[in-house]
Structure formats: C-alpha cells, structure tokens
Amino acid sequence: MRKAYWTYGILAAASLSAAVPAAAQSIQIGRDGVRLVPPQEMRDQDRDHRRDERHVVRDEISERDAIRIARRQGLHDVEAVTKTRSTYKVAGIDRRGNDIRVDIDRDSGAVIRVR
Image 1 (cartoon, rainbow, N blue to C red):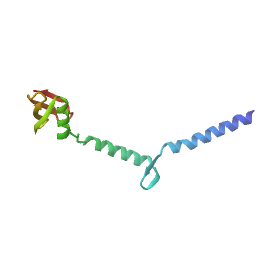
Image 2: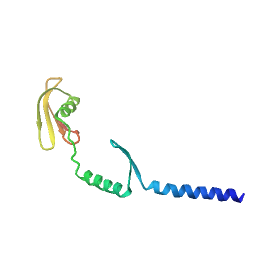
Image 3: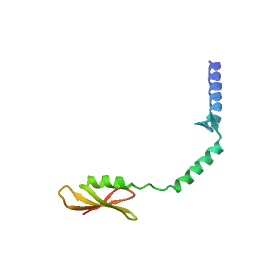
Image 4: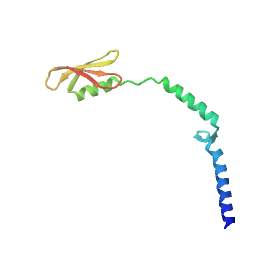
C-alpha cells in the first residue's frame, strides 16, 4: 500500500515539474511553421500591440453608405451629397415629390436630422 502512495506521489511530482516550463512558453503557428516563443518575446509583442492600438484611426462611413442610410429614412431620388467635417448632408426628393435632406454622422452613421 505504501509503495502505491509513493508511486502516485512521484508521478504527480514529475507531471507537475514537467508542466511548469511548458506553461511559460507559447506556440506560434505561421508561414514558417510551428515554433516556440520565449516569454520575453511574448511580452515584447504584447507591448508593441498595445502601442499600436493607441494610434488606431477610426474608419468613417462612405458616401455610398450615407446614401443607403438616407434611403431608409424616406429619400427616393438623390440630388446631392455634401461632405462636411463631421456629417454627410444628403439632399433629394421623397416618394411624394417633396424636397428632403438627411444629415448623417460620418463616424457612426447615425441619423442626426431629417428635414
């Protein structure tokens, strides 16, 4: 019985000691195949990635997207699209023949005003 406890204890200690160094590395799969990445290189990559996130330029909606949004607001025929600093102003005619203008935020695509 004692031999069994000692055997299980030795197996548990061996498996834990083998798992600790493996947890400190990462595997990277890429064009060059599979490679182990050392912990220092992983920290450098994380730091570079966080630095890049700070300088992300947000995309804005396109003029075509602005026209689609304006059509959802009732615009039938588009006459003009004006791009200002923060908005698109889409002018045209609705289904009844009335003049209509839809102001759309360039960053989010939200409708600001329908006149």
